[in-house]
Length: 195
Image (tube, rainbow, N blue to C red; front, side, top):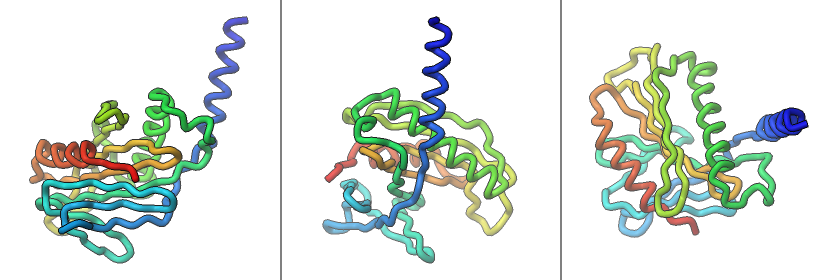
């Protein structure tokens, strides 16, 4: 009987997580308050990152990136379809599972859509100011040689706010100081304010 109940639980869990879909809502990145506050906003959510540094926005087609002390930072808000209000309670295991599924989704994009190798993926769960974050990073293989600034390493920090994922990405080239970029991402995580 116990085996049957456990198996039913596993099957229901798999069915639930198979229904989770990540999608890009319309969002905007802007810089406010004398150039030191980064604002990330989408429908029904506004997140601010007061910064000690001087960020600037780089427009690249329809995309906006930040540059902070020479480091490119991508920030985004992703919508997670399939999460009900009942599921949005503060549950660390649930948050971690959703964010892990999102990291797998992103790595599959690099593998399948871009044809790149994922080398030595690592992740860790941290609590910053009472909020759970999944920090994950990996090296890229098969990167086509174009220009001098090839991104060979990807560092991400993601957190769940309701049915949205707040996403910070620091792509790094061979000459980038990983420790300095990690400190920058950590500063952003520590400063995050949800409005």
